Image (tube, rainbow, N blue to C red; front, side, top):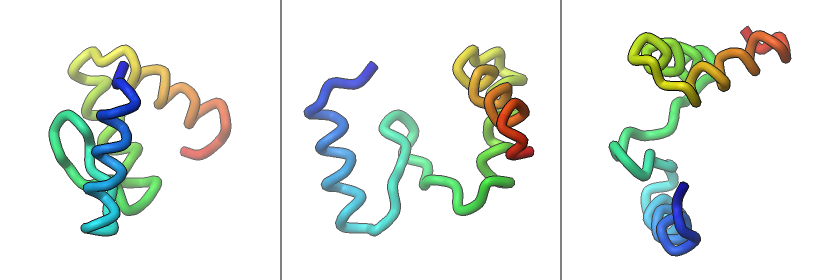
Amino acid sequence: MLCDGCVYANTVAAADTERLKCVFCRTEASSSNEEDIERQKKRVEANDAQAMVNLGTYYRLGTM
């Protein structure tokens, strides 16, 4: 969970570079659905529960 101040600071920083970055690791946002799915799969292998939910949602919606 992030506070509104952290979300705002990340949004302002992204406005300067025109690319959103992860608040935690500063990795740039994925440029395609395929790249995002591969990142989610990598996090699933690390037992990240939120990544499992995200990947399941992709399957449910037919994004994959």
